[in-house]
Amino acid sequence: MKNEPLLCRCRYALKGVRSAFKTEASFRTQIFFAVLAILALAVLRPKPIWWALALLTIASLLATELINTAIETILDRVHPEQHPLIARAKDCAAGAVFMLSLASVAVWTALILDLWMN
Image (cartoon, rainbow, N blue to C red; front, side):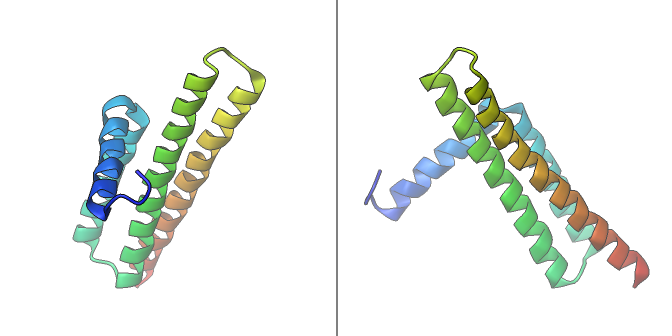
């Protein structure tokens, strides 16, 4: 994959997104909420800065979910048995998704408050 043309690298990336969508319920849930959020942006029509913040939050959350999936997949392949350090690594990756989910809620709360107050 290294030093391959951009189009090939994009295909690999999309293959990973499709794989996560097929195999990970949490990724499908995040996609569902991302679509709802984009529809809400279209309806609410906030200022461009809110579009940028919301879309950045959505992209960050989906990317983190993909990284979490990659970490879990690698760890399950390398060490399929239960191990406290493997569990810690998986929990930390899930914690990263959780933290971004909280940040997303904070951004949307601020957006709604801004729209309500103006």
